[in-house]
Image (tube, rainbow, N blue to C red; front, side, top):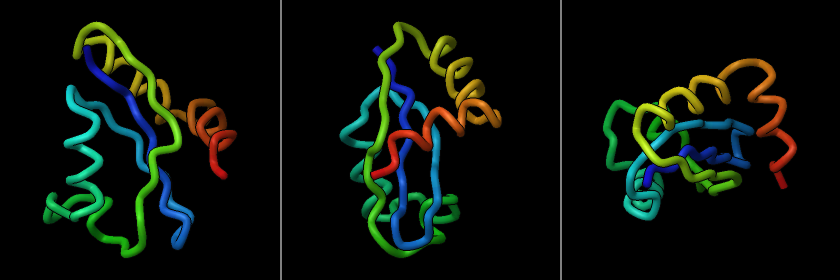
Length: 82
């Protein structure tokens, strides 16, 4: 199982879309800024999970991640921002 997810930083109004095999470990890494030069580490404030979906393979996850990063995909994700 793989996950495609979107997280949101309320303080800076930023969205990040990614994919992973372990969603809880990935969220912990985003919150602790474990990824040194990553997009999410650049912004202070808390990243909150606003959307996730499950797919069977990494290949499917990469395809779906790419779809969500398009204009229409981002419009879809913005509906989940609190």
